[in-house]
Length: 427
Image (cartoon, rainbow, N blue to C red; front, side):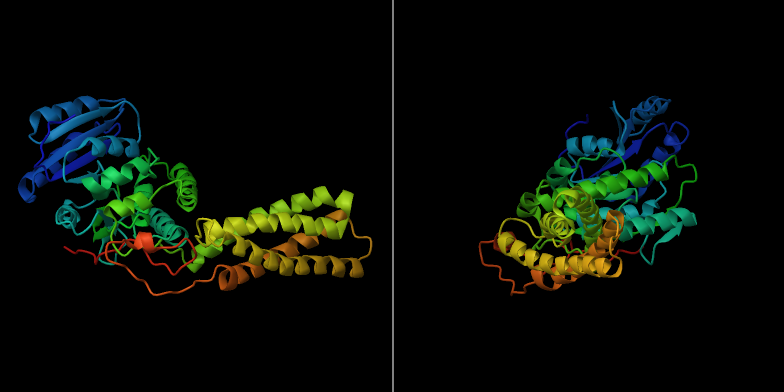
């Protein structure tokens, strides 16, 4: 793709798709800034994502006319795909990407890359949500952005403030370890990269930026939001099950001390609620199947038993972040005790129904039991958090010659954010 240059400090990638009207002006502007303002060696790489207009030819012309500008042509669309391809092949010490529209003020570029070149941090992001950022955009986009990032922090245990600002950098060493773990090839790539990096104990530096919304943006907000939610579920599941192996990344380059990033109470409630909804639906279906053959009370018991076991397993892994087999038997025994309390609530509701309305229909029984099961779900959350999966504190000891990862157990222990967010750099 490009000639080998082991002294190259920064490779600035500009992903683009059908940008024939603006590409030349924006790349020239970026080139002028780099030539006059950057103190490091640099390269600009235009990553053409299978454009169908004149973008590819313009990119080649710019590469021929401007020193330090290169063009790469990819056969398929996707910002994530482009960044994985170009970053993965780059020989620069720090890998950057900026949106083609240059919505972010380029004056933030030097503060973005400085902590990575010095070795202080592993990734750096521009944030439009810091108090000192100056942002011009519509209320709708502002609301969506803040809601999305709040959802990330409360459900995925991360601390960075702005996942989707098109102004990011990563060290080549971090990229070599994290990029192979990122599956998304489109817009969710940014979020996936940051979530995996923070869960692997890498340090994320944030730079407040000045940012002006591109009114001609072609991003479909509705479809992008849908794909983001799907991506969040996939990555959450991958981290919880160990399918996304962040431990080897931490062992290679993670910052110390390392503990699994914490999912706060709001995130726990949201995850527990989602699992509770699934459990309630499963309970209603199982009860409807069992009731004609074995009677109301027995059907209630069996349906609740099956869903309680599944509920405990799902909450153990996804809500409270307990991995591995250690303590699983004890957790399930305690979960059965909790199940007994929940069964008393639901069976008691049947007793009350039959006493107050003899001969009630099966539909009425299901309705009453569904409501009682929702109450039992709330009781389960309190007991799970306060008893079954309660935090067990112990002093953190890091022995010479070992890493905190080697000392960590798979039981539910006190946890903190894995990535240390540095104080924002201001201009």
